[in-house]
Structures are given as structure tokens and as C-alpha cells.
Length: 163
Image (cartoon, rainbow, N blue to C red):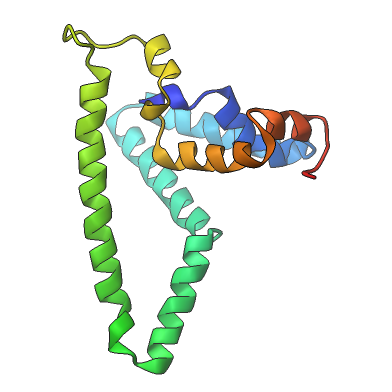
């Protein structure tokens, strides 16, 4: 499952820390703490999972989806328009997303199984972009569509901004 979490994915995530060694040290301490919690056993694993879920909740507040959902929520309250009721809209969207996620999980299991029924090895999985979560694949496509494969990372590593 974590084969998609390769060095390129980490570099994209940690690029903002490149010129901030103190922040990089703090991030390292957080990861080290999470590792220690996981290694400590069942209770520590639950605490680490809770911490990661909290981090996701916080990061959601930084996302475009969060901004748009908040704007849509406020507009619906102001207008009272039942056509765009946020709860009805979100419940429908969640149902569709859960269905697609379930279908992808089933497809993923089928992809991972080789034609002879044996599980595929990590190098085979790494070569198969369908094993990467869709969000990572689509954001990578968006980034490479404008620059070409790998150009964005190379440019950022060299300190060059996008044209």
C-alpha cells in the first residue's frame, strides 16, 4: 500500500522545509514520536492514528475544498435556497465517493493479484501507477502536464520558480 509513498512524494511534501532547517527538525521530531508510539504497541498505535487524523483535520482547513465548502455553506444559510442544501449535497457526494472508493479497493485487489494468483512484488507495484492513491496521481498529473515529468521537482530543487 505504501509503495506510492516514494522519495518523490516526500520531496513534494517537504519542499517548503528545504530552507527552514528548524522546521525540518520539528517535523522530524513529530515523525520520530509517531514511530515510537507505533512501536510501543496497541495503545501507542491508537494514539499515533489519532494524531495523524488530527493532522488531516487541520490540513483540510488549508485546502481549496474547505474554502469552497465554507463559502457554499454560508451562501445557503443566507439565501435559504433548498436546491443547494449543504447536507443533502454532501450526503450525496459522500455516497458517490464511498461507492467509487469501494469499487477502487476491489479493483486494487484484482490488480495486485497476478494472473497466476500470486501477490505481485513491490517493484511490480511501484511500476504500476494505479496502485498510487488517485489524489497523488491526479496532482502529479496536474504538475507534470504544465512542466513535463520531473521538471517541477528539478526546478524547485534548483531554486527556479515556474515560468
